[in-house]
Image (tube, rainbow, N blue to C red; front, top):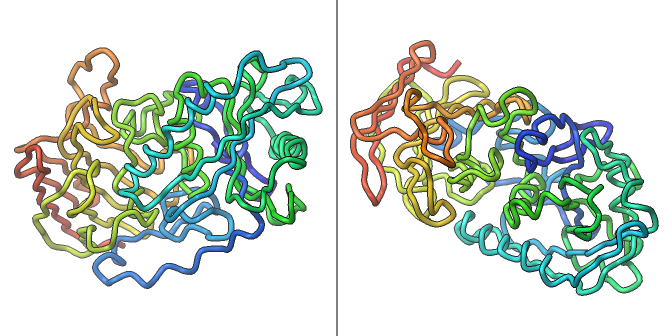
Length: 409
């Protein structure tokens, strides 16, 4: 979850499974050099895809395709990441930085696989501990962490490292605390506020950063891929209140970070530019079409079938298989979910439809993790005029028939 500048809402780190859900606002995404340029406006979408692309209305991270290129960094290309290791007067490091680097390094391969090679993290690790000027207990790391307190923490880390580091070479910053610093408990994302002076070093503005906490030792590199995705504009899919994982379960790393199928949803791959418009089957008008879906865990092929139901809503069907970043999913088949780009982060902008609500999940799985539909099964929303039938399925993917009975209003 990011911490929110005074204007927008902070993106919360989804790392503490139940605890994180209680954080309504925390430090947002990462530090980018001031020299980084905003991405150019995306090309106009072909009519078929444009009919299903939704606009965001929350003014922050959401499921819209119109992500602000000034507030968030591009999701494609190479992202140059500098990792700083910090300790504190009250919590000096008791070991080398090597184990910490090893914990986070797999994020690069994970992100490259998830994006079909279109997003690359070039992570540089410093090798020495940088001493912070204040005690670890003095930075206010608790749920409800303010943007100002989070920015102070980042500024202190950057200032301490600046004499030996050229920040102008990097797009974002990771800050990793010593394991002895138990007060730095969770991992918020920092997104800069253009209305303030912010954090600068070597003539560069630090726009995007992830400041890790002790929760990284529970979920490792997936903390990095979750938080870095906030800098791309993705919202939290877990709930900030109530049953933490009632919306998507473990079907996306933006939901249950410890889930068994953490590959980003196909909708997210489209929003971030990791799949092309011709890989999207869009049904925005009354009618019916049959679509052969290739699993989202592998590159190529049609990735999602979308039935648009309103200005900010759509149903999506995608194929999920046990491969790539999803080696041990609780179920496989067709995942069907509703997207609402007007719903705020942490409030259910994506909601998975459970194809087997009465099934008893095995150990390590939740009922929603068994949501995938199989051949012969179907989903209907009579109020929206939507029906999705699974016609066939196998190792190579699934075939669905999507039906829209009324125009998207």
